[in-house]
Length: 290
Ligand SMILES: O=C(O)C(=O)C[C@]1(C(=O)O)C=C[C@@H](O)C=C1
Image 1 (tube, rainbow, N blue to C red):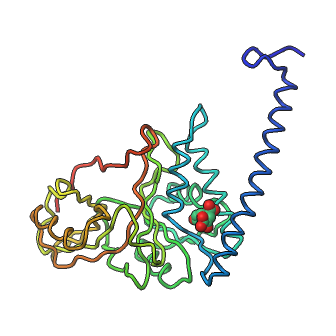
Image 2 (image 1 turned 30 degrees about the vertical axis):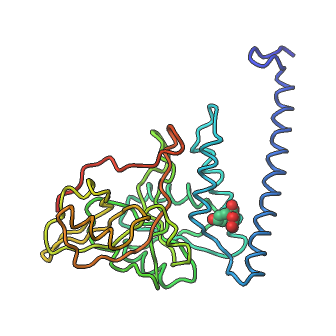
Image 3 (image 1 turned 90 degrees about the vertical axis):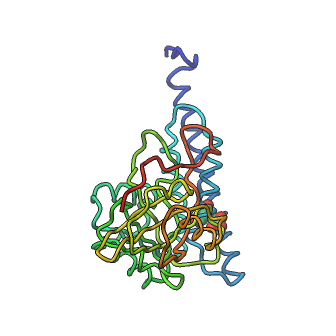
């Protein structure tokens, strides 16, 4: 058997090595599933419902992964394996469906849903974003996936509320120059106690006037907006450290006096997977004019 140039090992030796690594990975996966079942059992013993989706914890796991990652293996491959693993483990504890925004491109939406929620979770097509909000609100603990488009066809975020569905994550979470499943989207879930910890807060804001072009100068990103004869509905993202009064003041400084300003969720700041893991995502597009 000839020796392969790079490693100095024979093909048989290399295959033996791969077999050993696979066995270690498999053992580690089974151990992880047991540890995860332990977490869920401890939660139940403390009176908590099985936690199937914990965006802040998920974000923490992904940040650690980005920091650890090196070598040629695409980071997105590792991210996807972990997402599938987490969702497969949590699906053992309870059935959680993900409701999909049917107004988005179907292939892109399916790619995104399978990338982040794996193949253990049931996907339920909805007709549009408002339908997804209704389905999540009516469910016991389902998630919703809504495509983020600059100019929305309807102000679907009006249906979000503290007693129903809220924005809980923004996807893609790891920003990479070239990545699969890159449809910009929001994950909706029922409200829980961790909502106030999010890095970025999301607000439903309404003006009877135009949407000012300089909101970004005040640190406000317009995630999506809807124009009608009555004015503008905007879904805004801003630092989670600010109070509602601070957010109102920032809107006023940009030249907008919101008639409605409601907190409708939050999310962990996406990570830049191309460079410094501490860098967070900054919106690169120009502010839309209302
Ligand atoms: O850390 C927890 O609290 C867990 O429930 C574990 C776990 C995981 O599998 O890593 C499960 C689901 C959450 O989305 C995040 C973390």
